Image (tube, rainbow, N blue to C red; front, top):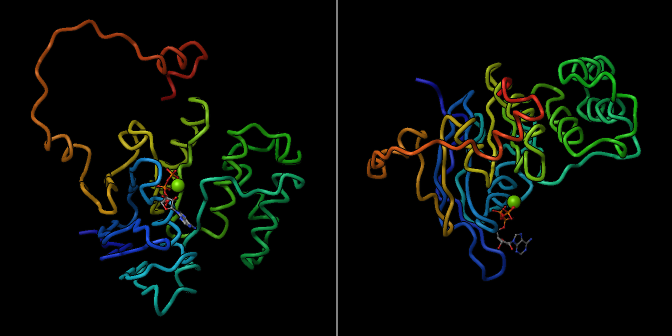
Length: 253
Ligand SMILES: Nc1ncnc2c1ncn2[C@@H]1O[C@H](COP(=O)(O)OP(=O)(O)OP(=O)(O)O)[C@@H](O)[C@H]1O
Ligand SMILES: [Mg+2]
């Protein structure tokens, strides 16, 4: 059995009198992709900020990679990375300089080499020496995720990694996430796109009313509902499928 790299029990958080998290429990298996779903304001970012040690919960039991967040927040910071809901890249610097800066901040022995490796891994050689301010939204996201991989963190938190991206850039992020998981990194992501969770997640949790109201594999969640009635209808392609076919990306999906 795989070990649980994240163990969350009875996490509560209120902002003034507004209770956002009312006792959240879940566990995340090492090397898996875990998706936290919830509507706007459900508390997804709050939960991620608590796990990333940026925000203190009011009551909590948070254990990450064996470290209790109360006692060893520094050790937790050493094995995670967070890509926030809004890109945190310096637009004046080039992509390469951004990566080098993070590698230096993370005290890597050879920051330039670390940056070069990520640039080639993310296929960004052409754009690497241009200012990030000239990048498209998808390229910014890509460099943002690349930055979070500097130093090979065990766990990466991605807060709505594809919000605002076009379908093509979204597929690219999905590919990166799948590759990360294939190499043993645990990925915790939040999303409002149900299809994203369907495509990526080993486990899906739904945060609603301050609690996790469902947590299972996609197959398991489907069993919660009565079997669909069999109907014979002509299957129309979705707009997304049409869009991707027209721009020639469908076969990569
Ligand atoms: N610093 C803060 N002070 C007061 N209220 C806050 C603060 N941060 C978040 N909230 C409130 O807590 C609730 C949960 O916010 P949070 O950002 O965690 O939700 P979310 O699920 O990430 O939403 P979204 O999908 O819009 O990103 C919201 O009602 C929000 O207004
Ligand atoms: Mg959020």
